[in-house]
Image (cartoon, rainbow, N blue to C red; front, side, top):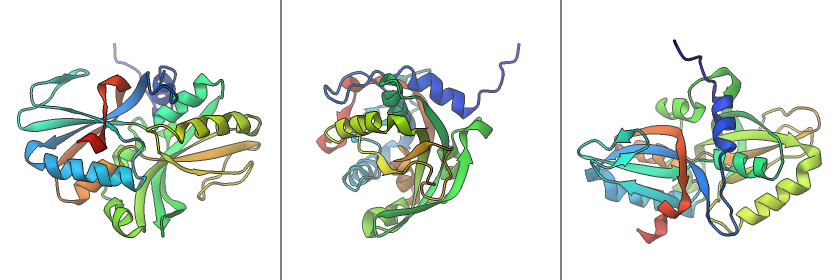
Length: 248
C-alpha cells in the first residue's frame, strides 16, 4: 500500500510534539537538520558554522559531526564525507507547544536583510502546500547571500514564520526570555497582533514570530563553492550528544 503524501505542516507537528528540550538545564531532545560535506572541506565548514553562530545566522551553536562509516538515523555516512547535525528552528515550535501554546506554522522563505535588520520576505513557500521543506527547496535554488550578511550585514537569508494567538503573548515572551540564556539564538523578529510580519499576513487576533533558518550555515557553505547535501528536519537528537561549535 502506498503511503499518503505528508505535507510539511504535519511533519512539523509530529516533530514539535516530541521536543523535550529545556533551555534552563540545556537538556532534552531537539529537532535537527542533517547535512553531508566532503572531508577535505571540513575546516572551512567549521569556520562558517562559527561565523554563522557569532553573527546570529544559525538557530543554535550546538552541532554534532560524524565521520565516514558512522550511522545517523537510517543512514550511514558515505566514504569521504562528514555528517553535520545542526539544530532546526522547528525546535521553537516544540518549546511553545510544551508550554500549552498552540502554534500555526505558516511557511519558510528568503528574507532580505539590510544593515543587519530584517526587511521583508521576498520568497515564501507555505508549509500546507508542500511535502518538501521550503528552506531545503529555496537553498537548492541558490537564492541566498548568507555570506554577505555575515560579512557586510546585508543580503538574503533563509527564515521561517509561525503564528500564535495574541492571548498567549505573555507565555511566548517567557519562552523567548528563557531562550536568551541558552544556545538557541534563532529568533529573527516578533510581530504585533493583527499586523503582518516582514510582509507576511497573520490571522485575525494572531501574532507572528520569524526565526532564522537552521540551514543558513549550510547555505553559506554552498555559497563558498563547497559541495553540501542537506536534509532538513531529519529527526530528534538529545542535546547531550551535541557540542558548542565554539569548542571546535
